[in-house]
Image 1 (cartoon, one colour):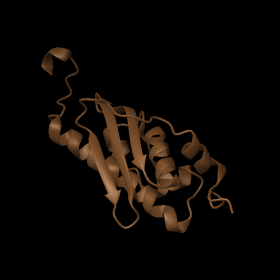
Image 2 (cartoon, rainbow, N blue to C red):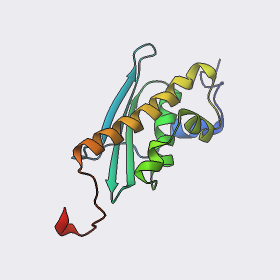
Image 3 (cartoon, one colour):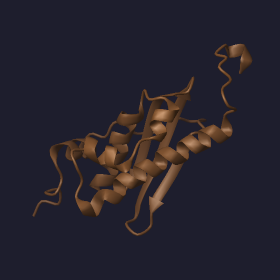
Length: 138
């Protein structure tokens, strides 16, 4: 029996060829979330410049869906403003993956939680931007 029979080609592609694996050393926008009931852990690191996510990387320990959700999340939020990234939902991640089995939706929920937590850590670490973009004001 194929262990991946419940997954569509998009999920399998992101599982077998995950995008943006790694970290951004020194970034305050890093979150690690887990689901003790299922054993999945997702770490998300963001690189944010001028109020925009210019890079996203992840590491995941878990099932096929957890890895695919982490990978897809990095693709979805790169290039978005902080406010746009904050509005990402678990359903958006699952839809972008072409759907997840009902028993694996918790993996897309982890992705949403990781984004929100990473952005909260960024906001806590970086003073509110006052509209000035010159390097002398930072």
